[in-house]
Amino acid sequence: MRERRSERQRRRQARRERGQESCVDGALDSCLMCRQCCPEMWLASLALAFLAPRAGVAAEPGDDHAAPRPAGRVAGAMYEAVRRYRVTVSPGRPACCPYTPSCSTYAVKALARHGALRGGRLIVGRLLRCRPEAARRRGFRDPVPS
Image 1: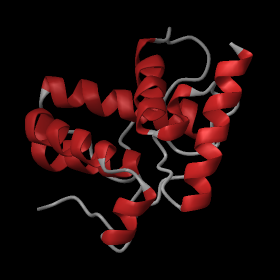
Image 2: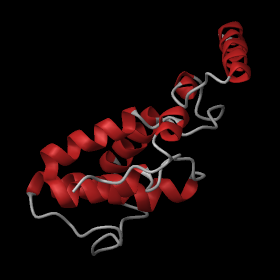
Image 3: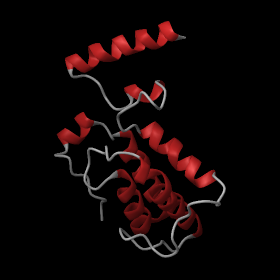
Image 4: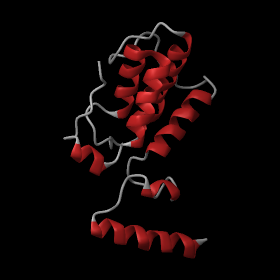
């Protein structure tokens, strides 16, 4: 196991030196070793925040400051999951999203503007392109389409 990890670290170091590393490369390493923002880690954190028991730190009642709560039931549940991630998980992690606005703010705005189906599709697309080289091509800005 240790040999496999060190081999992965050597390959990752070689990609980093060539400038070919993306934030997805660290997803296979342990959470303590992954120092970059990874869409897979964001999704896992979101799932844990949504599925975790409601005891302890909970989201404050009311709307998120980025966008109001959507009217639909499914969009509302997705909105609450993202809000819980923003309140419980996100403050404990360093800011690492290369885009403006961040991925969680984008998710809240997309759900409020477009609902569960189109907003969910926009969120998945954003998470798939959440890499430094993709952000650089877009000028580090990726607003929610109107």
